[in-house]
Length: 539
Image 1 (tube, rainbow, N blue to C red):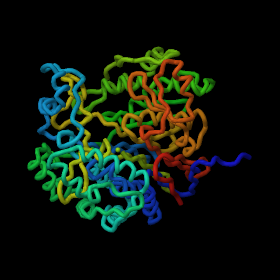
Image 2 (cartoon, helix red, strand yellow):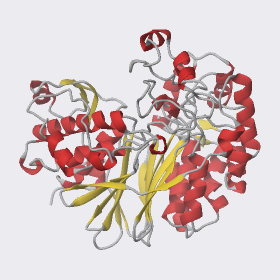
Image 3 (cartoon, one colour):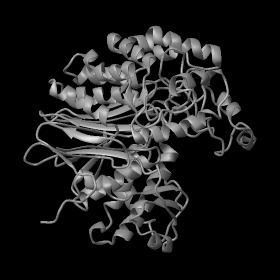
Image 4 (tube, one colour):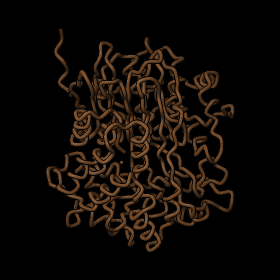
C-alpha cells in the first residue's frame, strides 16, 4: 500500500464536520455541533466568526447565499441585497471614470463603462444579518444568541491574525491609502494599527464589531435593519454622499429559492439560480458531459474545461441578472439541446466565443454536516477585498461593493437600477447522486468560482479523488480572451500549442475551496483549501 501524500490530509469524522478558510471559525462551528447544535447552527457560528477573523474577505456588511440539505431535500437561500432606491443609471454613469464616461456617447451607451468599485456608489443593502436570521429561523436548533459567542469573544478580546489573512490585509491597506474622502476615514481607524495592517500572530481587536454583533444577536437583526445600526448607517450616508437610507434597509428581505441542477456522469450538481453566476458552472458541465473525458489526456481535458467555461461565462454575462427585474432564460441555458449546440463550438484550439441564443423561458466559503445528515453549503462576501472601504463610525464593519457588478449599458439585463440586485459572483454548490446527498462544496474567488466548481467536480467524479486531494490539485484560471493562468503542475506548453495565452504562476486568483462528502458506511470525509489558513475539523 502506498504512503499517503505529503500534502494536507483529508479529515475523516464519524459524526459531523466543518470546513472553512480560518481555523478559529471552523472551531467555532465544531463547538456548536458538540453543544448539540445542528449543521445550520454550526454553519452560522462559523460564518459569524469569519466576519471577525477574516474581515478582508467577508463582513457583517456583505451578502450571503446558502444551500441546505435538510435530510430529505435541498433548500436555497438568496440573502443578497438590493441597490438603494436612489441609485439610477444616470448617477452611475456620472460617477464612471472620465474616459469611460466619454465612451458612453449618449443614452444608448457602450459596454466599456464600469461602475465605481470603492466608496458609497457601489454599496448595496447588506444581506448577511438577515441571512443569518432567516437560516436560523427555518432550521436552527440552538438559541440564535449562542451562535455569536466565539465571534463576540474574538472581537472584544482579540485574536492572533493568521498568516494569509495578514498578507492580504497588508495589500488592502495599500489600496486604502489611495482613497480620499470622509467616507474612508473610519476604515483606517478600525482596520489599521497606526496606519498599517496587523501582522501574522499580532493580536487584533474590534470592540465596535463586538457591539454590533451583540445587537444583531439580541434583536435577531432588527437593530440592523430597523433600529440603531440602521440609523447609524443612514445618517453616515446622508452626511458623506451615500445613497443608502433607512427605508432601503427596512425594506430588505431574503428569498428562499429552488436550486438548479445539471447532470454530470451520473451525478447531479446543484447551484442557486440568478442573480448568481452558478449557472455558468452548470452550463460548462452540461457541455463537458457530452465529451469523452474519461479517455482523454490531462491536457485535452484541461483544454475542454477552459473552452466549456468560456461558453458558460459568455452566456452568464449576457443573461444573468436579478430575475425580479426581468426573466432570465434559465430553461434554455440548461437545455441539453442547447448544450449540444454550444459543445459543437469547441475545437482543438483556443476560441473566443460570443453569447449564444438560448430559448427564453475578497469572499469566504464554508460547509458543515451533522450526525443526522443535515448539510450546509454557505458563502458570504463583501467583494473585492474589504469591499467599498466605507465604515460607519462606531459600527466596526465594512460595507460591500456589490453594486460594482452592475452593467452600465442601457438595455442590458443587469443594468444598474433602483432596488435591483446586481450580478453576483458568490455561489455555494452541492453534489447528489440518485437523489441522495454526496455533500456541499464551494470555491470562493470572484470570477474563479464557477471555474473552481467545474475543476473540483471533475477531479471528484472523473478522477475519484477525495475532497482534500481534489482541492490540492493544480488549478487553472481563465481571465478573458485567450488568457489563462495555471499553477505549476499543469502542462502549459501543450495548452500554448493549442493557442491559449498561458502564464504559469502562483497567485491568489485560484480561489479557496472546501468540501465535505458523506461516506457510504456513515460519517464524512472533508477537505480544506491548502492555499489558505483554514482546516476541516470534525468529531
